[in-house]
Amino acid sequence: MIHIKQTNFFKVSSTRIREGQSENINKSNCYTYLIYVATGGGYIVKDGQQLSIVEGKSYIITKECMIMSTSANLLTVYTISWEKDWNDLAFLQSIPLADQQSSKLVPLWDEALRIQKKDISFTEICKLQSVIWSILSFLTDHTEVDGIEETKKIIRNHLSNPYSITKLADKAKMNPASFTRAFKKRVGMSPKEYLIEERIKSAKLLMLQTKGITTKDVSMKVGIQDEFYFSRLFKQKVGVPPSVFMKRSKERIAVVSQIFLQDHLLSLGIQPVAAPSYPTIYPSSNGLPSYLEKQLEGTVLLNAENMFQPEEILNTQPDHIIKTPLHNGEIQSVILSHQQRVRNISLKTQWNEYLREIASLLGQENKVDRIEKEIATLELKVRDEICPFTRKGKWAVIWIRGNEIRLYGWRDHACLDLIYQKLGFEAHPDIPTVGYQIVTVKELVDLNADKLLILWSHEKDVSRVVKIKEWKMIRAVENRQVYYPNSFEWDPWGPIGRKNMLINFASSLQNSKLMS
Image (cartoon, rainbow, N blue to C red; front, side):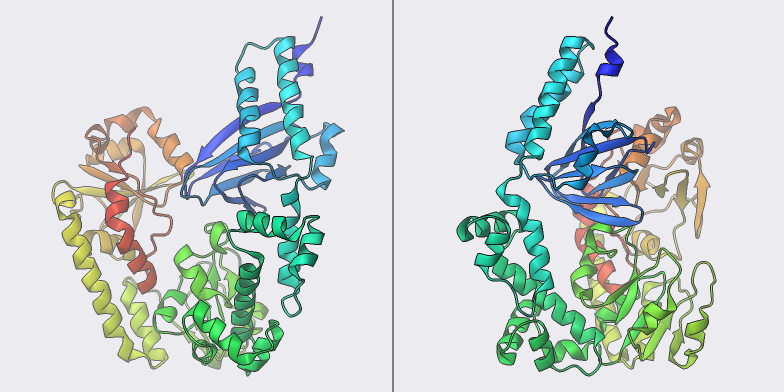
């Protein structure tokens, strides 16, 4: 008698993830997963590290991880999994897997899924394994695109004396014309354009982190012998000449905070030499909201999810350290030994209180009124735009997290102040005044809010909560007045973040009804 379960080594699955959302893989840590990206792009996050994933590539995963989409279109991922102690495929972990176009592989993946759904029989298992081995044969048959990632590393590591296109093509085992086409298809730009982009990034880092460096020195270090050509190129790409860019960090400032105070500094025309980041919250943009990523090229990013390392801060040679109280109350002894450099800022309830205090510390008070006026004008414009949408009904704002639901108050928080005070949402009378309360779905039913706004919540957490029986009894749910915008980057504590949120607010909100 054939033991079917022992014959079926593999499990095939697929998932589609929308932009900003994520999916956990291999929660039990008992399996090895081969992941193939059919459409879109994003990141794999595991052990606090992030790995970029792109269409057409495959990845081997042996631990629990999270896949996050950064694609405007759906991120479509197919997986094959097998028990970790099965050693016949262990070699896949030590070899590069070939890039393959989705048009070639997706029909095979879909065929495997179709067979797997049938009643298990020995014949069907043979068919399934035949399809899976065909997929594996394609992924271990290296194609011309496999050398692109290696050539990217070569370009980054040889900025001062880059390889020629011919040599890069040789490394990728391709002719120059085919290599250039493949590189552009994979990276989105030609090898020459990629070299320029990497030189500009390196130049920014040198300008911010090397005290007293000259434009000529920077130009030579990034491999451009003509200082004047470098200056023209830098201005073309960055918008200002190198001399102006370097003035942004003339007064060297490090930010030691769990708040993005670099937002305020940038709005004042100052780029910090060090600033906080959250790599697991914003894995696709170097630990920053995407609207800050480009503006902070060259800044040393400090991991605010862990305890700050004083030597990492002081290595940037700051003239001043702007510091807020940290959540765990730690006092950094090394920073205290440089107390004359530390500018302590208390926690605020209004976004512009931070702006005014930082501007005062740095002698930039003359810029504050203009920034506040620009934001106020935009707030009024958005308020008028959404007035027909918000004038009826009382609102509640919630954040659905892994193990709790937070019901937020209506003031003393930059985002909630913006929603209720500036944009005209009418707060339900029974929500908290400040802070938040942990509530159950039953308590949301009792609250009886007309409209519900879900912020900052992962799709898997929302999906879990809407399956709770009482969810459908919430008044806002019954009336189809639940809104779930993509709000992961809604952080209006600084002028740039506030402006970014306002620009996208009306369209994001009006197109975000949650149908449950």
